[in-house]
Length: 97
Image (cartoon, rainbow, N blue to C red; front, top):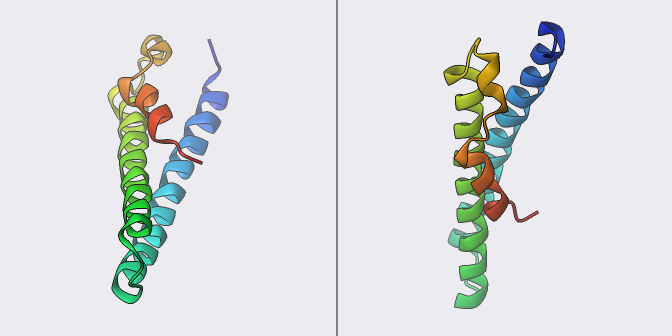
């Protein structure tokens, strides 16, 4: 069993990571909006940009769900922390970096 200090550090880092990812998603959304309003590229490139933006949004939703489950739902239930949440597994499909 981990000590409370190391769990705080781990969950703190996860929370900060989720927050920074949400901030960067906002930057990506603004760049996507700018691209679609100012560039008139052919449909294959526009479709690729739309797919990448969609994957970014889906990935953010999945990591937010994972964080919510581990940080809120499983709060003070250390036995459940070994459970792998479905959204954690699904993130692998949408992590395109």
